[in-house]
Length: 387
Ligand code: GLT
Ligand code: MN
Ligand code: MN
Image (cartoon, rainbow, N blue to C red):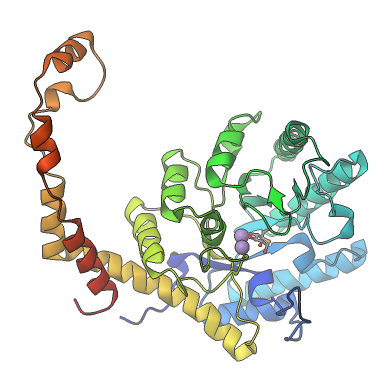
């Protein structure tokens, strides 16, 4: 197998990912900035399908309308030249000092109104370039001290903003779906809607829940100590997996945004296996960046590595599905002699009465061992390449 990315793999990167300059809280940038057009060519050269951006990754916050139009025209030409598309767009509501206390949830009504204005303009830009998914990552929506903000009020402001923007899109006739991206902390000490579960619940308090889904990020759930595949599965089950951010992370660290599969090989496998088995057809977006030690050759290696690891995991998932020993174990584990069918499915009063009267052999139920050690070891050997 060559593990070469193809358009149907739907691999995407943000301009901010391969364009990351290696700045961190302790150090200056280590790479010279490439223009958006150069970044599009870099990604196309490595086999990506699409490129995503924040408004200000493409158009500087200080640009005039004339400058904006020139930048967008150049960018569109690069997309045509390379065949790359823009499946997703988003707003930078975190970098500017105006957002130091949040955007949609700022205590200041002027900041909240400015955030709405900036987002409407950014949505216009995204739609102009073809985006079908719009991500909301509320990086500054949170607190350091809960003395500073009323949480319920903040959630109310958040809800009003999302409702306003959904109505704006409807008014404009935009064919856009929205994806909330949860994160527990960083850059705020505590961010609102910290997990996929919290975002899923919040969606049902909005005016148009059908328009909203989630954009789970592997590293963000892991920062909360959670199982990423479980979060993704729950979003999928709810019909809410609109987008996904793939990367990696050591447990318990800051948001490292490592290359996909760089650390958590097993988690990466289960995730890819899940997405492929259920037939997820959205973008596989890599929200990661190269190590600060990288030069642009190494940034290219980083981008290739993300896609290659995904494809290797996809092949491993196929191997898992075809492995006789593994499948026999799975069959044994999921065996069903049919004796309980009388109690399964929808409730009926008769079923309940019969089930209450049924005599279970509780001790026997607790005595059976399960071959999960054997199964997991087979998986490990498959992943380590000795099967
Ligand atoms: C930022 C953040 C990401 C979000 C991006 C979208 S910006 O890089 O760390 O997780 O997906 O706003
Ligand atoms: Mn991240
Ligand atoms: Mn992300």
